[in-house]
Image (cartoon, one colour):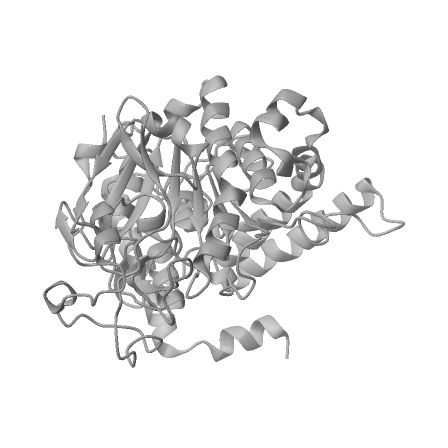
Length: 488
């Protein structure tokens, strides 16, 4: 039997009735609402436009760059200054602070929970006087351009659920990621590059880092064209980007036209919208064969720009190198890029590993913001920095004056945002003297994602996708609030 005929024959009664009911509904609505736009045209965004057609309100951000510190940076060693802890070195964390809150299995059996003050000095920086750790001397130069949020919180206490949660709005894998929602809702700003690009970086801290799965930038049930495209730091930036030996550009075009013709026939017989996504992706891959090599060739970057980013600017795969690529992607019209930097999981030997991690990213963060400002892109580019949760004030394992480790802490952690109308030089939210509980202006990760969408002109309550009887949203079904105090 023909495979297509077999596919149709195996279609369930429920699938058949579902398709028929949708068709009847569309036919009825068309008499009132004018011509029906084909489903695949909407899914593809039609002329670069996403499912929304246009934003819900004027957007401040045209594009975004998310600097994600996978593993969870220690907030009290970087941004959340807690000087009173020095007086409490090696004393027990009070029960009145801990409040019986959940601990991971890595420390729940500890006999003691001794307080480990940060060994790093903090100093007021910029006109705002924001307190910044000595580990971030370069980022401190642009502190008046960023908003530091000290009161972010989450329910997830282990890495995979936590990073899945902050990326997709759900701890259970399989939901669309933030970049995929932006691609789906708003569509593309360019013809020759993906709407959503992911860059994975090398790191010099603790090498036993948590794995990063492609589902973190996946599209879930959205059409697959909205998933993030990961650029590699060695070989072809995208697998199979180069034509095989003996295959000319013209022959590749002829082959692609033939495959697309088969896919169009398949759609006519089966009606699977994903077939159109496949055609779209094949065409994008063909255009990327010319656009991606040009993008990833930094030979045209002036020396003064590379020097501003630092010595790692010329080393492919480093966070610094990827920050330059992210700026180039933004210039080329890529709507959203995300840089992952692993190794922030300092359960032990924090004084050894954390400085290396900070050195990896510090100068590049400063240079990226400075670069965007010099090019007139800062006002419409949103930059976000941070990880999936925070670290505990108490020590995991043995505590000494010069060495300590910290466990996972979801109750409060720090992120920062910049550009696209975010108020620079601002510190939002407060935590108790132990950096353990939030005392003012809590920001759930749902609120954070709602605020990111708002910068792109999207009402988080009105961007959804019907799947398995549910209207999926990035912010889920619980209350989420835009952090208006952060925004102009």
